[in-house]
Image (cartoon, rainbow, N blue to C red; front, side, top):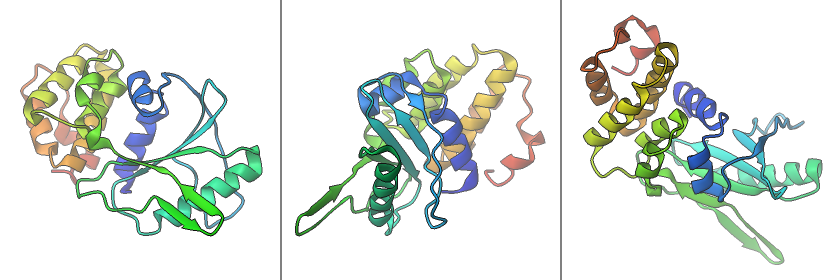
Length: 210
């Protein structure tokens, strides 16, 4: 995943947006765990959570179709079992713009393995916009949208109520994530139409979006 999307998504998910977490797991809270693997071939888990029922949840976020995803998740499951003596619930959350096209199960003799594969565009963005958590609000830009322009305006209305510094931070995240839906220019224009003092052009990291 491109670094700017990766950082923005991890920052949001690790703040445990309650409505979004409930859409994925049925729980609106969890304890985040920092897990490290000894094998250099395995990258750090995107999100690792202990749920209230003590199940372990692994979430990996993908902005493109990875042909090696099935094998990688299988390895994750083995490493996690080795460390925690329990198998994790595994979710790959696809946030890309192209059609989802990844394998999520395999079977060989007595071995059966699968992970849950969720296209974030199947989740109801309206539920996230209605949340009082700005992390939920920003994630709505990636979900199922009835009307992109109306959705952007509704998200920005929510963000406009935040303290200026916090509002600016979430607008940055919204701009990053909107790039995954080719909506960054639309978001920028709507931000410029708002009575805000933020100068988007002064930020060097926006130049690769616009």
